[in-house]
Image 1 (spheres, rainbow, N blue to C red):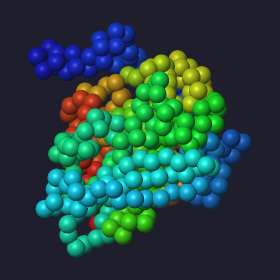
Image 2 (cartoon, rainbow, N blue to C red):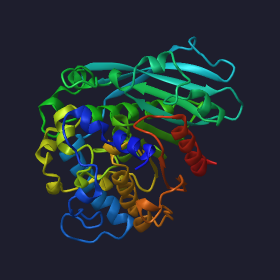
Image 3 (spheres, rainbow, N blue to C red):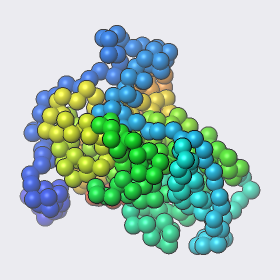
Length: 393
């Protein structure tokens, strides 16, 4: 075994060593499993038409996902927008900067969070837009615009507006403090429900409120919009796309378990690990499937299928075994059967994971498996832009 091979194995095992616990990173140890059928409804009827998918099967799937995994995203009474800042623009030669206060009212309560938005300084608007849901250091939005995870200049140069909100302003990403955001202030009754909104649904709610803003901003073409998330925010991006048909493209980057990766594979991060380390992300009902993934009445291909017929993209990394790249590809491959079988779209993904050697940038669906570990890079964003160009240009 050469030095490079040893390094690859060592990096792939790092999550096990860090966690102080063994997890499965070998395909030979993936259990035999049976996936529930996307195209058979709860009464045992086969779903073949758009009408039956949209009126019967998709509502069943959304209810299952909401009840058992994420919690159902709530509506609101009123919303308003206020332009707070246009001054702290690090790219004045290329973009106009806006910081928007988004205030939502529910019953007698209200809550405000902020959106950062860059709009190209050209005369070709209104502009297609990327929204990034971010959970990383908040300073990366406020002060640092050139990192790989937030490459504003790259996106602006490609002719897109670039926006982001930080999840902490909606629901804190903290198992002890997550109630302090919209759940306590707007929807306290959700905290009492076993299928109530938790962090991931709250972050999806935030992205949907940003879309409410996009629809009334004359600089933005809301019909050409993409919601993007990495890791836990990638899980939230997929749930956003499933809930809100206004997003033309949904993109998850290394979203792993609870995102694009199939849970029943029990590869890398598991349902038990999700529930024990991040109990604030999912519904209380999801706990029933810790170490019992075989009992799940769904899997993550249901989530991707619910996004159809709109475009969906999944990014993976070879050394990010914790997120199960093969499971992510399979979730996408199986989920986009809704695009092909129900909506008759041409889905040109590879037949199997081992055949993925280059980025697969197609109309309706895309996937890449890059070198490297669990991270968000400019390379990822360049592939997302290429995919968006395929849909919009």
